[in-house]
Length: 127
Image (tube, rainbow, N blue to C red):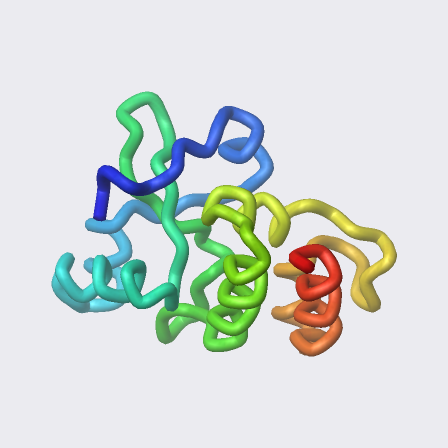
C-alpha cells in the first residue's frame, strides 16, 4: 500500500488545512492499523504522503465523528473513474469554488448537503 501512494507536493500540503496520520486515525477511531489501511485500500478514504518524513496521512475533512464521511466514496469513484489520481482528487475537493451553492470547496459543499451537485461537477470535470 505505502509504495503506491502519491507524493502530494508542497501546495497540496498547504491547501489541505489538517492531516491525520494512519496511526493517529487508528487511535481516534479505536480500530487497528490494518483496519485503517483497509479503509484506504477500499477507497473509503484517500491518503497521500505528507511532511518531511513522507508519512501516510488522510485529510481530516474526510472524517466525521464516526469515521469516513459516507458521501465521499462515490465522489472518489467518479473522479478516479475519470482518470484522476488520489492526490488530484484531494486537491480538487479542497480547491475553493465560489460557484458552488454553499461557496467554499467541494468538500465544504458535501458537508453542507450538496453531494449531488458536487458529484455532477465531478462527472463534468472527470469526463
